[in-house]
Length: 441
Image (cartoon, rainbow, N blue to C red; front, side, top):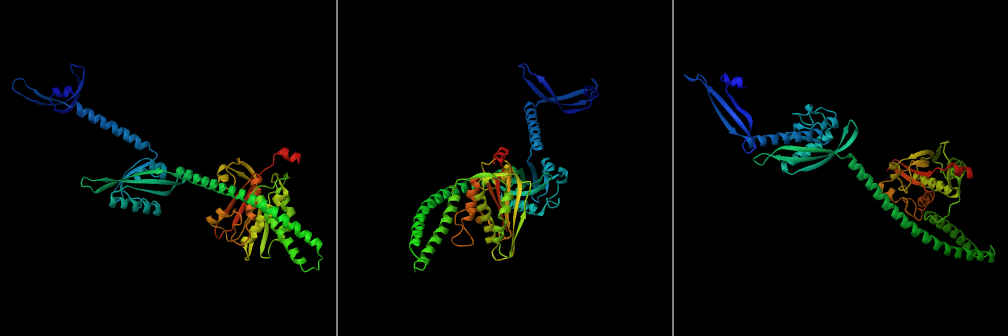
């Protein structure tokens, strides 16, 4: 620079830091021109201006720009700016990780010109037009296909105003909210399970109390009716009427027995059992329940581990599930399929079952009874285990609540899969028996 200066070359805005008498540093901007004069030959004219504050402001601005660029470049969120025609003016590198497309592909183009999914494009465009018209921010959520599979994103659309107050550009901040949505869904399912469990526990207490008192009264009626039959000859006019009372009381006793099962007041008599063996024993009985227009099929896993259970109650459980499936099919042609399998239940699977919040993850013996009936909607599925709830016959509806009581007594879980028009599958998960339990049996 000095050599150029000596030859007379001009320069402008050359910054030079100088130290003042008080020890402070100042930045001087020098400008210089040279002029030839008759005697000296070359004269220099220089002007120095103190630009310390301007230099500091420029340095601070550059530092903030570097910080902003670092934030934008490393942010997992997609940050982009579009004009009023929704053409991209800027987009952050996160878009490459999200959609697998380079940043450069976006500049100057709209989402539709980029060939992005029309459903998502229409949603975003509609929201952007509303922000341009109203000048108010908007938030929309949409599902996108990414290299990592389907993901949900929340886009916050902010207006940026020109000096005349009109919306000039839009700033979009797009964040992946997939995990948040999953957590909210899990929380919703857990809350629903807790409410359902509390409702069933209340109904269980009520059913147990009613069944106990009702059973005592039935015992008195049955005892006196049977004594009356002993005192009367079969030809007596009242004999057949009293006999009808005895039969009705016995049927009522069966109902109270099912209520006691639902309430968990029937003690278990447990042994090491195999569900396949139970099903083989019940084949003639189950087949007798089938109308001619309903087929009964079996798909059994013969490597099924044993369980520790009450044979009588499990017989009732299987019978109630099959009877419920027959009633669901009604008078149309259909099929019922009984399946046994080994099911590895993780926390996600258990969260979608009844009675499972406290059960451990692991292998369970699974029994599924599936029918080709009309299926159920969400409201029906939520009520299916309530006592006396039924969509078929008035005065019935203790079959599935009894199933729930039996499963609960066996420390198992129940999963219902059903949609209107697609039939219903009820899966019972029962803990497998420890080897020492089998040996003891």
